[in-house]
Image (cartoon, rainbow, N blue to C red; front, side):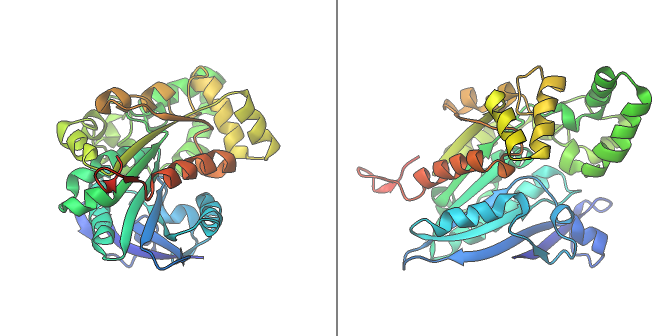
Length: 340
C-alpha cells in the first residue's frame, strides 16, 4: 500500500500554493504516493517516479493510502524486485486546479530534494500524457547542476500540440458528428466526460489552442502548450543526463490484446482511435503530435504499440521499464560520466 504525502493545494482565488484540511481539496492536491524501497545491495538509490496525470481522488477513497494495483504500480514494483540494485518507487499525483506550469515548478523542487540526497544515484521520471508535457518544463526550474546530471526523463504519449480530448470547443462537435444525436452527445458529456475531467487547469491546459470556451478561460493557460518548446525549456532539457521520447500507436494486435485481457478502457481507446483520430493515434493523442519533439532536440523517438493507457498494458509498460533500465547506471568510459 502506498502512503500518500499531501504536499500542497493550489488556491484558484489567491493564485498560490496553500495548505487545506478540506477533504475535497485534499483529493485534488499535489501529492506523492510512496511505496516500499527495494534494497538489493549497499549501493545508492535509483528513484522511479511515475507521473501519469491523475489525481488523489481518482485512486484513493481515504486520501491517505493508494493501492499498488493503481496505474500499474504493482507491475513496476514486481519488475524492480527482480532487478539488481536499489530502487524507491513513487507515484506523482497532480493538483487538479493548479496551472500545469505551477505543478512543474513544485515538482522540480521535489526532484531537486531527491537529487541532493547523498545516497541518490538517479532520479527517473516516467511521464505519461499531460505529465510528459509538464516534464518538458520541469528541468528549467532546477537550480543545481547535480540535479541535471542525476535526472532522466522518459516521456510517453506526449500531446505536445495539445489534444482534442481536452478541448471542448473541438471535441463536443466531434461527438455530435460521430453519434449524430444532440441528446446522446449531451448525455455522454455530462455523465462521462465532465465527471472524468478535472474541469480545471489540469486538463484544459493541454487543450489545442482555441479549444476552450469563453466561460472556462479563467481556468486555462493557453501559453502552456504554445510555449512548450521555448528556448528555456529546450536548453534545460538538453542538460539532463538523459531524455527519451516514447511514441504510442494502435494496430490490430493492440486491439486484440485489449480484448483478450479484458482491458475495457483500452478497448474504448482503440474505438476512439477509429472514431476521432482516423486511426493515427493511441486513442487520445495523435502520434504526429507525440513526435514533434524529435526535430526540436534532434533525437529519434522509441516506438511501442499501445493504446494511450500504457500503464494498464503490461507488455507495453514493461517495454518502457526496459528503456529506463538501459539508461540507469550507464557510464561513458571516456568521460566517466553518465551517458546522455
